[in-house]
Length: 336
Image 1 (cartoon, rainbow, N blue to C red):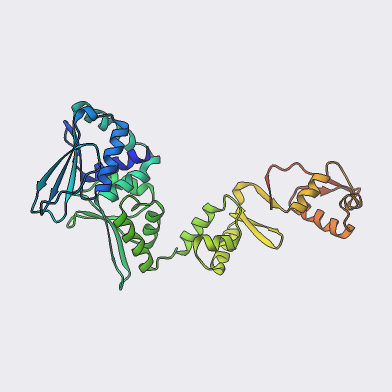
Image 2: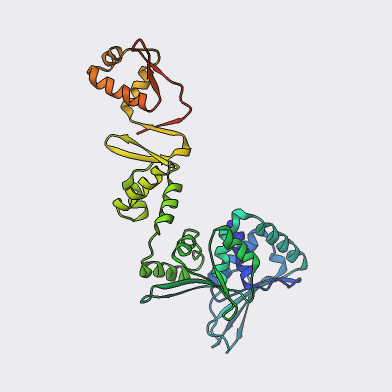
């Protein structure tokens, strides 16, 4: 389904969706033509429809086509590079294809892959190393409300240039979002240029965006050092972000074996050590500190300190007669 959505994006980006008698796709990158052909063949058996690929080149060269289709070669002196047209004629196939296109267009979970197709088909990268200006561009002959709907769904801001007939997406935050969506993954040359732009532009997460991304990750516990490595940012910066999130009561930390593990408050999770887990296992019924210390073969003071830690976490309580009792917790417990 993902490749089918990518092909829908490729086909929509090209803009030739009015023909009622055939499905066509044109591009100068044969990898994309191969993807389109193979995906169509997997979803719409059409061997008896005699699919064809037409190759146009400015100098008459005949690149090898490694697909089981009829191939025709033509000269086009106006072209700068060879380009390929995949074509399969069938009114019935066109009806089925249009139905699939409409279904996929309405599936928001496939927007990422449709966008990848749009960019592979009509996208390009523009940046200047010296000025650190950068932009992701998607050519469209006129305003495309559907493309805008996809970009809006990912909170990507853009502008449409009527003079250049292209959507221009700049701003560091937008570039990072598009990178996370793998917008250039389908086209090797564009992907390399996108990655080159990231490197030379020295793009860093703005503070608020980094905070947002860290918050997303903390559905499961992480240490500050783990986050530092994950986001390729200094430990000091990650600690500042974690402190900000804690002040906002969005996350909390648990100290286990001299390490602080951070997790989102809305995950309703408590993190404890294996030592404290053993204490909970022992404390199946009301017991005194001395009873527990004797079973653990530890000093009274050491056991009492561990019990106070569990009490602070709301997992046990000390009764008036100085015996300890477990409390039923409505939170998940993770052991480190």
